[in-house]
Image: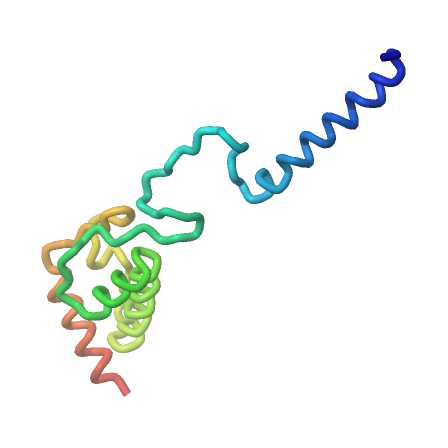
Length: 127
Protein backbone atom coordinates (compact mmCIF):
# COMPACT_ATOMS: atom_id res chain seq x y z
CA UNK A 1 0.00 0.00 0.00
CA UNK A 2 1.16 3.49 -0.67
CA UNK A 3 2.32 5.61 2.19
CA UNK A 4 -0.28 8.35 1.49
CA UNK A 5 -3.13 5.84 1.87
CA UNK A 6 -1.68 4.65 5.18
CA UNK A 7 -1.56 8.22 6.46
CA UNK A 8 -5.33 8.35 5.89
CA UNK A 9 -6.20 4.87 7.17
CA UNK A 10 -4.29 4.95 10.44
CA UNK A 11 -6.14 7.98 11.90
CA UNK A 12 -9.48 6.58 10.71
CA UNK A 13 -8.71 3.23 12.34
CA UNK A 14 -7.73 4.97 15.57
CA UNK A 15 -11.01 6.88 15.59
CA UNK A 16 -12.94 3.66 15.03
CA UNK A 17 -11.20 1.95 17.94
CA UNK A 18 -11.76 4.98 20.16
CA UNK A 19 -15.43 5.10 19.23
CA UNK A 20 -15.79 1.47 20.29
CA UNK A 21 -14.61 2.36 23.80
CA UNK A 22 -16.35 5.74 24.10
CA UNK A 23 -19.66 4.43 25.54
CA UNK A 24 -17.85 2.47 28.24
CA UNK A 25 -15.65 5.43 29.12
CA UNK A 26 -18.64 7.78 29.29
CA UNK A 27 -20.26 5.50 31.86
CA UNK A 28 -17.10 5.33 33.91
CA UNK A 29 -16.64 1.63 33.20
CA UNK A 30 -13.19 0.25 32.63
CA UNK A 31 -12.23 -0.91 29.17
CA UNK A 32 -13.52 -4.37 28.23
CA UNK A 33 -11.27 -6.99 29.78
CA UNK A 34 -9.72 -4.53 32.23
CA UNK A 35 -9.63 -5.38 35.92
CA UNK A 36 -12.25 -3.64 38.01
CA UNK A 37 -11.39 -2.69 41.56
CA UNK A 38 -13.99 -2.82 44.29
CA UNK A 39 -14.00 0.26 46.49
CA UNK A 40 -14.87 -1.89 49.50
CA UNK A 41 -17.98 0.00 50.57
CA UNK A 42 -20.23 -3.05 50.24
CA UNK A 43 -22.31 -1.57 47.43
CA UNK A 44 -22.66 -3.72 44.34
CA UNK A 45 -23.54 -1.04 41.79
CA UNK A 46 -22.76 2.64 41.28
CA UNK A 47 -25.16 4.74 43.33
CA UNK A 48 -26.20 1.77 45.48
CA UNK A 49 -25.87 2.32 49.20
CA UNK A 50 -23.71 0.01 51.29
CA UNK A 51 -25.64 -2.05 53.85
CA UNK A 52 -25.81 -0.94 57.46
CA UNK A 53 -23.07 -2.46 59.62
CA UNK A 54 -25.36 -3.13 62.57
CA UNK A 55 -27.71 -6.10 62.42
CA UNK A 56 -29.50 -5.39 65.71
CA UNK A 57 -31.76 -2.36 65.94
CA UNK A 58 -33.44 -0.84 69.00
CA UNK A 59 -35.36 1.80 67.06
CA UNK A 60 -37.88 1.10 64.30
CA UNK A 61 -36.93 4.15 62.21
CA UNK A 62 -33.35 2.90 61.86
CA UNK A 63 -34.33 -0.73 61.29
CA UNK A 64 -36.77 0.19 58.53
CA UNK A 65 -34.32 2.51 56.79
CA UNK A 66 -31.45 0.01 56.97
CA UNK A 67 -33.49 -2.89 55.63
CA UNK A 68 -35.00 -0.84 52.81
CA UNK A 69 -32.09 1.31 51.67
CA UNK A 70 -28.89 0.68 53.60
CA UNK A 71 -26.66 3.39 55.03
CA UNK A 72 -27.89 6.08 52.66
CA UNK A 73 -31.52 5.61 53.73
CA UNK A 74 -30.56 5.37 57.40
CA UNK A 75 -28.60 8.61 57.18
CA UNK A 76 -31.53 10.36 55.51
CA UNK A 77 -33.98 9.07 58.12
CA UNK A 78 -31.73 10.11 60.99
CA UNK A 79 -31.18 13.58 59.52
CA UNK A 80 -34.96 13.99 59.45
CA UNK A 81 -35.15 12.77 63.05
CA UNK A 82 -32.38 15.15 64.16
CA UNK A 83 -34.10 18.12 62.47
CA UNK A 84 -37.40 17.26 64.14
CA UNK A 85 -35.64 16.86 67.51
CA UNK A 86 -33.95 20.25 67.11
CA UNK A 87 -37.32 21.91 66.53
CA UNK A 88 -38.97 20.05 69.39
CA UNK A 89 -36.27 20.66 72.00
CA UNK A 90 -34.53 23.82 70.85
CA UNK A 91 -31.22 22.09 71.52
CA UNK A 92 -28.25 22.03 69.19
CA UNK A 93 -28.25 18.40 68.05
CA UNK A 94 -25.88 16.90 65.49
CA UNK A 95 -24.89 13.39 64.41
CA UNK A 96 -21.99 13.61 66.87
CA UNK A 97 -24.45 14.13 69.73
CA UNK A 98 -25.11 10.36 69.70
CA UNK A 99 -22.38 8.94 67.45
CA UNK A 100 -18.75 8.71 68.51
CA UNK A 101 -17.76 8.00 64.92
CA UNK A 102 -19.40 8.28 61.54
CA UNK A 103 -18.96 6.37 58.28
CA UNK A 104 -18.62 3.46 57.81
CA UNK A 105 -19.51 2.09 61.27
CA UNK A 106 -21.48 4.97 62.86
CA UNK A 107 -20.42 3.85 66.35
CA UNK A 108 -22.76 4.97 69.12
CA UNK A 109 -21.87 6.74 72.36
CA UNK A 110 -22.91 4.94 75.57
CA UNK A 111 -25.91 7.25 76.11
CA UNK A 112 -27.10 7.27 72.49
CA UNK A 113 -30.22 5.14 73.02
CA UNK A 114 -31.33 7.20 76.02
CA UNK A 115 -30.89 10.40 74.01
CA UNK A 116 -32.85 8.90 71.11
CA UNK A 117 -35.75 8.06 73.41
CA UNK A 118 -35.64 11.55 74.97
CA UNK A 119 -35.75 13.19 71.53
CA UNK A 120 -38.47 10.84 70.28
CA UNK A 121 -40.68 11.78 73.26
CA UNK A 122 -40.02 15.47 72.64
CA UNK A 123 -41.01 15.08 68.98
CA UNK A 124 -44.23 13.28 69.94
CA UNK A 125 -45.11 15.98 72.48
CA UNK A 126 -44.39 18.86 70.10
CA UNK A 127 -47.38 20.62 68.58
